[in-house]
Amino acid sequence: MNLESIRAFCTSLPNVTEDVKWGHDLCFLIGGKMFAVAPLEKSDGQLAFKCTPDKFAELIEVDGIIPAPYMARNNWVMMQRYDALRDAEIRELVRASYEMVLAKLPKRTQAKLDRG
Image (cartoon, rainbow, N blue to C red; front, side, top):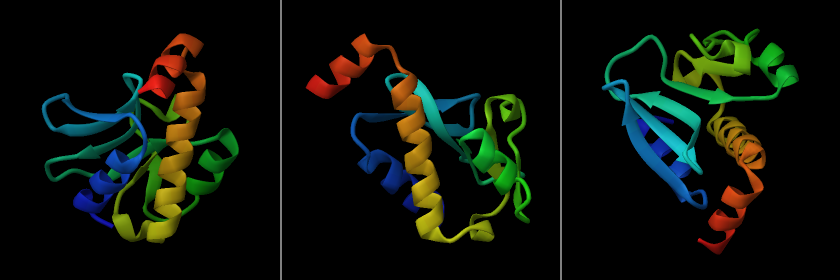
């Protein structure tokens, strides 16, 4: 995967918006809440996303995946390179992050998204 394929996948999910935050990070959001972040400039990481506590513990054992700076306490990991996982697994994990963030949104926000 690369930034373009990550962007295409994330924006294919329902009601996803994009925003550039901190001057150089492309953030993918659902209901205004981030579920994935990819740097637009050369960086130590390629993609960060939220995961469950169990998956967090499993993923940080994989070479090329580290706890995401500033967000590890919320179970976010950062892939330092795209080849740390298979493309299908990356898509599955990003979709799971999207679903976790969506599920935590207020019911009113979820209802607005459903009406799209």
